[in-house]
Length: 139
Image (tube, rainbow, N blue to C red; front, side):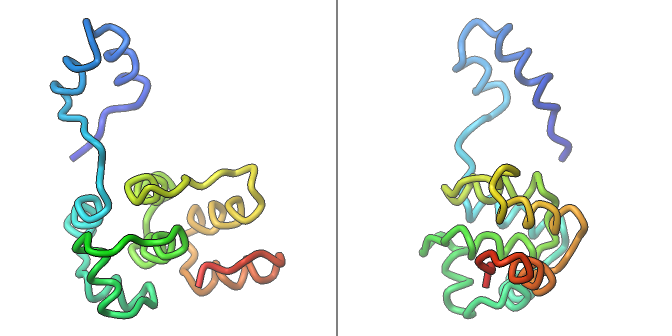
C-alpha cells in the first residue's frame, strides 16, 4: 500500500473543514508498535522468528514485543529495524510507534545510525561504526 506524500496530506488537512473529517477520511490513528511490526513483516515477507534471531533478542522477550505484552527500549526497536532491513523512514516510523524519539541527524550517534541505515549496513557493522566513533553501541 503506497502512502500519500506528506505535502499532499498536509494540503488536504489545511483545506479540510475540520481535523476530524480529514482523520476519518484517511483512517488516521495512532500507530502502535505491534500493528506496525506485523505490517512490516507482511510487506517484507519476514517471520517473527527470523527477525527476533537477526535482532539478537531473547526469543521470549522478542515475541512479547511483537505481541504488545512488553515495551521496547529505543535500542531494542533499532535492533528490530536493522534486523528487518528497514529504510530510514520505516525505522523512524517504528521508533515513533514505540513511543521513542525518531533519529535526529544533529545527534552524533543518531547521525551514524542514519548513515548506516541509508547504506544498508547490518546491525553488527553499525555497532562497529558506533564503537569506532566512541559512541554507545545498539547491542
